[in-house]
Image (cartoon, rainbow, N blue to C red):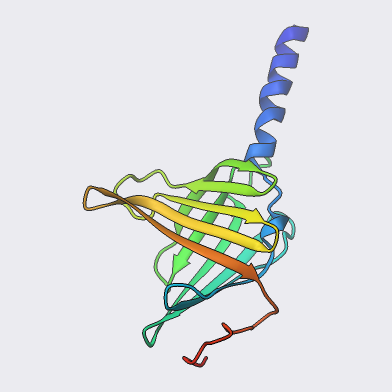
Length: 163
């Protein structure tokens, strides 16, 4: 009986770190000024198991946006955490946390036929690296961003595209 209780406690306790990672290291205003595009991504600090995010991309005279949140997948106390992406008002896509560490998190959706399949964030000092991965037309594809921590609403230094 005691062994069964210990095993149950270990099973219940072990996934919590994985299911509810501390992602406070993602909070802030992040700016990427590479490859002819300006990308500004903002993440709120975690508040009661919720982080809210926005992303605005300007490239070639066009603007794209995404609203995101990282939150539990349900009301249960042991519900897994996930990244909910809403690009340009489309239906949300859910990417549950599949692994995390103190400065890295990986989210992955269940569908194999949708791009992206995986979202990865990794922090290194004042740099936040992000990438999306998946398959398009039978080929593995990866898109990467290298964000620098910046003051809220900062533009890229040589940005001529305006707001």
